[in-house]
Image (cartoon, rainbow, N blue to C red):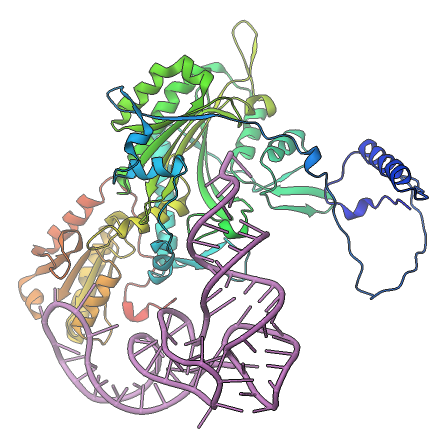
Length: 538
RNA sequence: GCCGCUGUGGCUUAGUGGUAUAGCGGCUGAUUCGUAAUCAGCAGGCCGGGGGUUCGAAUCCCUCCAGCGGCUCCA
């Protein structure tokens, strides 16, 4: 008996396909195996009783999908790799393989050379040890919880990207995290990207969690009346979160997550030339983020053969503007929605790339989501759309920042991201009040200063200030109270076992910190000003 | 998801079949200190969960979960 059990599926096909599948199964069984086959009517409610022997809980439902025979044959794509130098020279990628540079590390990975035997990435320990972020066992794999210090860094990074996007002319929006698979464009877009999605049922609607912020922004663009005069138009969203149901074994630390925060900008362009101009600007935002975050980046530019043949000069131009050699990958044909993209990557402590900022030219989505404008002649245009993440996901940025510290003699974060920027260490209880006053003035100036008022030795408090990676540490005692001058240990200028100390007034300290963080976002402390009140998370 | 390794108080860890180690952290007390750990006392663990073998299991076996390495993948 072949019985249609529609309610067992979370992803129903059309009644037509169901009936044809049921017929097919019936025919195949009776033909091949000589069974007597009957088919229950389709589309009716019916009742039947079935008796069989077995454990009461042994019922199970299995999903059977077409096997290999029916799978679409994977397209054979050819990849060609080479390097362009800023001077416009084309070089063999293999020539870089043995170099000890970040670009060489990227090239080895892209060309598929095995890396050294892996060890646990340093950021996985650091992210917990520094009380930033940790695994949440009560959630799904790859969903993390953020402690105040980590939350502060996240928020500062979000502030940073927002500021860059705003000065570039992007318009922030916010869109839903889940979408209805009943919508044709959503279903198509989602289907292209395989099974790595969170899907679920809401009432009787099949839903998915977004894996990027494209859906919402495309939907806005679709519903807009777009004038070519207002192009290029840039919409920006910090997608908290984007969800990708990565395979369990692939999820790790802050590098690969199932829920991550993607700064996502989409630029609706007038035409390809327009897209190329914006691409160039956005690539520069990517390089700039590497400088501002103090994480060196290397780049790979990928495009189709057709694109390269037509725009080779332009490709050389963006490498020249980048000022560093870049790996170039030419694909024999287009397999994804993009015809050209650039990926910038930091390199982790084991020499493996952490792919971060990206810009892509999408030539598919305007069609799929019916995003269009009309020319003066009345022609309908579905223009190219740029996808850009100026920094890459916030989690990966933090990953890169932490990995980067492994190469430093004295590890530290950029001062603008340090959870505590100035640590004041009173020598004895009678100095706490004075230290608090200084701290309050630093706080008022926009500096994250805290006071270690705990009943501990100066030695211990100084040690722990170092373990907190505080960029500026000042011990406050009788001497300071008398002279008003502070002895400040500056972490960035220190060497191992050789702290660099400088005498400065309170105003000079404020100036020094503010100069260092100039142009970067400011946020107050997320933890108590008095360390005696700071709880331990780890 | 596949193959392999790992899982002992909050953290780091000793313990390979016979009563669960220690340090840090926490709490209490003493100490009021000048640039990387002041001293003492106390509390805290059914050894990742479940099942099995055994007189007896942290230790051996099975299974599940989680973490890491390597695949595949990263749209």
